[in-house]
Image (cartoon, rainbow, N blue to C red; front, side):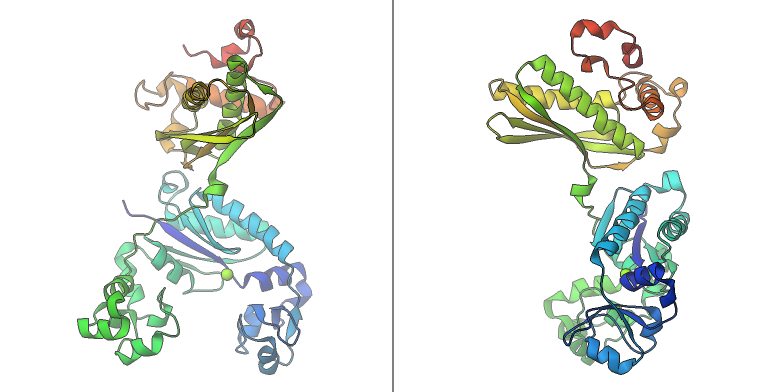
Length: 412
Ligand SMILES: [Mg+2]
């Protein structure tokens, strides 16, 4: 299956935020940056770019090129706030978000297509969402890989949307200036031009001698890039991608039953959060801190990914029990359950109704109605609050497990 990668880049980000927040600046030659003697343009509005002003230019030079320049001091906190909004919108589309800066990211939407429509539909909807929530525009490039997506997002700025399907990669890249190629800095460029290479096509079809003259031993790699070849995966920020729940106990716990009850509640919380986002997890991590403050983590993977509380709990409990025994049943100060390797929930899972779900079809669903039980629990909590339903073994004493709540969790 072809990958579908989006490169999303906010247009003139800092300057656009300032103009959005202060509409009196609309249409004026606005730059964001320090205006002292050694100030530099941090962001240039589209109006000021007509004067040849661009980011990273010394502010003095910007004033020279555009005497009516409007300089706005940077407000990093505000940009970060908008950045968080935008990245939250990215993560509505896919958990596979690789941020490149505050206003730019790769999104792997390959699997999202199953749920959200083709990549073009996803990109259009994302642009609309970004505009609706922030009032700002973004340019998006869609391509089978990161290299082409990044080039594509730049072809139609601002407010652009450029789709380069696999069969069009060569036609789109060939005429471009080789200076747009990733990894080709201004220092190398004169040598590349001297070798007779000016466009992507020149590089794609260059002779070995030309390649060697321009790039030395990197020739083959650069030719592959000019051909639009790029196998690099979108590498999400795993920190952000871990959904976790943890608890520090008022007093250290030693009783295995009490620890298991705590673990159950944590697994349940983490799973509910993952399900609420429409995701499934590929790994579970159990975090453990002994009373002497030594901290341990134990991790295992699922295949296929799941957001099913019982499946997660099953692995988490075995990780915990093994660790607890190895350690000689120590008192525990903190427990945590983290879910990582997040992917969008498969359409199969979302569409499958309890009655129609075949036994054995999804190996991680051990009971035929477990998925529906989780969704019932989630729905009740959404309505009545997180405390409305508790998992059976969250109950403090085992004999309480026979009460009404256990109906919700019963397997068969
Ligand atoms: Mg940008």
